[in-house]
Image 1 (cartoon, one colour):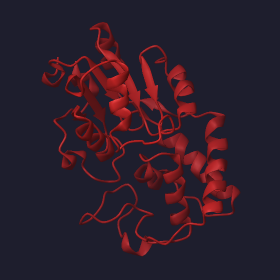
Image 2 (cartoon, rainbow, N blue to C red):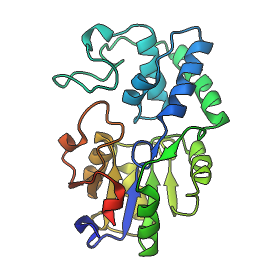
Image 3 (spheres, rainbow, N blue to C red):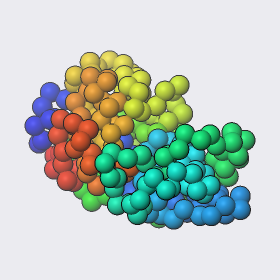
Image 4 (cartoon, helix red, strand yellow):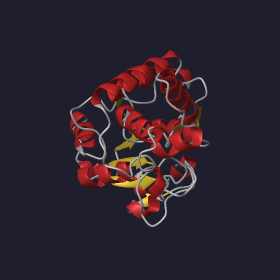
Length: 247
């Protein structure tokens, strides 16, 4: 058992980039929405750098890219990381995106993604073994994602994980989402646990920031979606290459 689990009663997991690689399906939906709006598509490599702050922010980044906003200041190819702490692709400019266009693009994205959100989504290696082992040891498992809550159940059911989590929170379950600590504090309160007896496991700086702000211990995986940044730079309490190392 990983040392970070000593004294832990509950483990909260992020979803996208931590348990599942959902970018293939997300990218298809993003590109379908852009195409329907008559805009240039983004491609899977770019979308991989845009995931992590919820679907509305995802489409905002896609629209910024489609409009050519801020690309000149981001010279790297998509998916290759960032230079010198520069901005995430599609966020180099503070120029506003038309609100009505964003709302329409988001609605079209949700329509496309909702048709089959798990068609090409797969578990990362070691995830099932980790979750099975933690549950067998009697630990409480929670899911805290910025993905809209409506997509959580279909994905978990399709992957055979519907019974693993006692509580699931989406990005729209509460007024605040990660990196705000509110979702994690809600999880701890729901189970009557003090935050120091809880562990947050994620792939991005948003997961680590939320965990630290909530008083959770934090564990990171380096293979997910962190906007091209090494997640170790966020200062998690631990890092594992695969979640099977947790057990």
